[in-house]
Length: 217
Image (cartoon, rainbow, N blue to C red):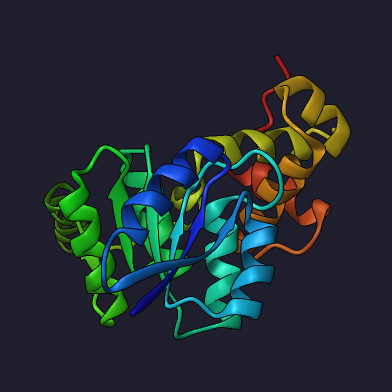
């Protein structure tokens, strides 16, 4: 029996997945969560084999942050990203965070079941399109002879927030300008500082200057 946890901020999505998966003889959904914080707590308490993790959850920790923290706390847990984002940036970041698989919500039910079975067995699962993207990226890096810079691993939003921070804006001011929560700004800031190996705002300013990001027009 594969013990599952479904993490998604939409109740309808969670209910639909639970109904589908509990209908399988060898699978049981033992927990559900609406955000990354709740997922981390319940996973430690209930110890599911596989976590189906959404990426975009506006309240609490997002899916990428939760995936990274869960893998640090529970290295043996398998995390299958189930998302609407058909985007190579999210794909690469999910794998870097420790996800065992990446699947679109539009995938057929049969593929979802196969993906769960695969990651529960200790294997990785990527749909064919995702596999082709990874191989293409790998071949490009070999061809160029250089790995991507740390800056290249930042999302567009992280680059945007880096620019605002470097210009001296507070987290609250950035949140108001971008119409997002302060907690979301803090999460992006934490992620980008970790990726860049930077530990303070002054270092961020110096880094942004080197990258030519301080355009005050």
